[in-house]
Length: 456
Image (cartoon, rainbow, N blue to C red; front, side, top):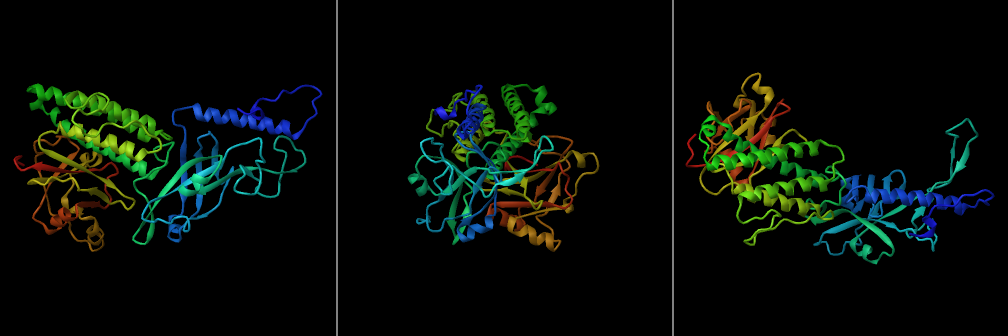
């Protein structure tokens, strides 16, 4: 801690100099920064960042708004307390077959050097002539007040390596694909909230959907025939359902909480790994596998994508060992156009029957849905079907919910015609889209792939 950051000794008769006021500002700024650093684990990263992605085509980036906490605890807000100039990165991206990471850089405070200037080497800059400020306490005269703001730079990996006495925060990673600059969808910066990064939020939301779909499977064991036949499998599946429901209730609460830190969510997920490891002989409580499979990673705030992808894979491995009968569930999620989409890369290779399961409390209290009200097709075909009012894959409503599917009042099951050419295209492209005009707000959509031995 520099002496300049220590508290000033104020006393009678002191000859006031700028250094006294500078040191007072520095002391309070230092204490606030330390509070930011220590208020919670991994209190570093992006809070919010908005930029125009269209400018990437010209190898440039212009930040429109930014909120972030640097590793030192300094809070940055643009526009506000920092300057952040647009950045051209064409000349620094020499090897375009490799990704380019852009970093926020801020020079550290050094009392042995000038800290306020107009160059990239200064910590603060003066944004312009002092602006008139009125007396905000009393009705006194106005006066001109000059300000200083943080001088934040955007640097490439190579420039970061040569920068001296700066602190850094990764901002985003870019790829050069098909003669265009795109954002790397497998990278999310250190984030202070789940929604700070769209990549992180999509990943966490997908984990929740996966766990929720598995919980719906295990609700099969609430059926009366299972309750009266309390064998070993019933007890095991009931315990798994309890662990999933306990986790999902808190998980949903976390996802609905503003400014929720990803570290807390990761702790909840690894707790579920520990609980599910009880039912797997090859996995210990800490996510370590005895047979060489992937093991649970420690929380890495600077590599959030790999961290959450890893725990998702482990949870799926553990749950796959407890699959209810021979069913595979895939949940569909809505996009900004109101079309629900799903990835079918993991559909089974063996023979199967496909069901469409719709869940909604609102339609359960009014009338059952009819297959003519909605349509399913491959993602690239759904828009054409909507525009021309054409039907999608043929569906048949089932009067009785098949075995292995949760028997709920708000669940409606349809059998998909796999002989349809539209369905064959879905299998080829391994993606699916669902559209329902004026769909209920609480609608949940699941595909169920049932093994051929299970009768409908």
